Length: 112
Length: 114
Image (cartoon, rainbow over all chains, first blue to last red; front, side, top):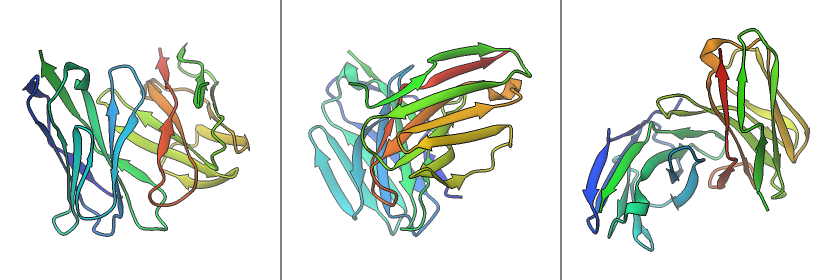
């Protein structure tokens, strides 16, 4: 069973600041990494996926992956009140592992 | 058009009862999943079907029985219900089975067992 740990929240940032979310995983052979956003009372929605070491940028979101350190992070630049949500890190193992393991989530609040 | 739909959205029932939650996806995906999200927001996989075949069956009490009549539908039957089953249950689907596929979640079913 993969363990996925996220930094405990809640994380409160002022509008316009950078929110930094961290995630570590225990299974060294994990290959696929995802960040989901979940608004209160809603379902998770995928915002980023990353498979290779390094950075991947999509708009105001940047995912960073370091497989040697078993670490994946998400940066939200120019944070907006609409970014206030719980962010779930999810990890999938090797090619024969079909399970997506989720972390407990980090709740982000962006103060206007 | 709703991609992944679940019914009912809310379900309040008594302990010991027998209930089902239904899920349908119109994305043409091959793989469907059931997740349970508890009060601490921890989202955990329960079952997965690929083309109607059970491929993931986590350590879940056998009171929970999934059924996939076709690859667009995955239902979850619970009998008998217990207090600890109160949670939000999410259905999800993905195009293919394997690493890297994006999972799309339904709106969730909030189950309350009294």
